[in-house]
Length: 306
Image (cartoon, rainbow, N blue to C red; front, side, top):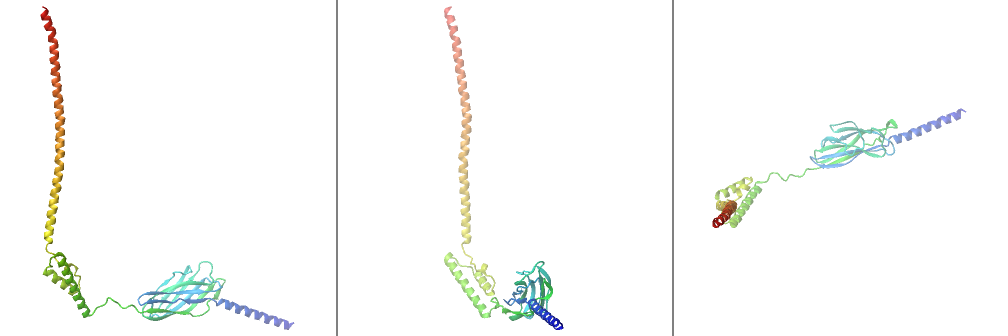
């Protein structure tokens, strides 16, 4: 009987050990990985923190990392693409950073992006970024640490900034530029002389040469002063005055016929009225004459009878 009890105790102990071993294997299943990134000196780059818990459910992740502060300068935490809606404590300084992200409700399995950290590239070369620590919480067993303990790392590749093409030039190139500018100015002056049959003044030529040698904008001084511009302007003004006089004359020629037509209309109106009155007066006189003749005939008859 005692032997049976002893065997039962041993079997139970083995079962418990196996259960704890399986539980420990399941508990340490979440991996924390970092993405790689590259940039030129002076630009920003972002390292993203990702987790993968496989079939284990998780709802809270805290990650501590270290970075090469001689080549990377912390800028901000970047939650672009993060699948965790809870933002916990976060800090970064002196080559190390810590960030906490979680879920307000529910839990995740498999892989998800936790967050990102944006750095400014300070110097060319390879900058190491590594996972130092992590705490991953399983809502079904909140006292367990689900991180698998692997301190993954990544490399930020930083390229040198391109050489500036707008720097200072040598004396030879500067003088060459001045001579080419002077020659192009001379060609421009020559072509202008051919086209306009006029020559630029001496003052404008010297000004353009001095401006080109100083390296300043010589656009306004390289334009030659063309003789005959004043003559052309006077001619244009004269044409404008002649055109104005012609227009005024045409306008007066249009007004005169209208005025004459109005006068003729008024004369016709009053002339018609006068003619009507004159005809009415003559008709009235003729009627009176006929009436007088009619009255005189009977008187003449009576006198003859007597």
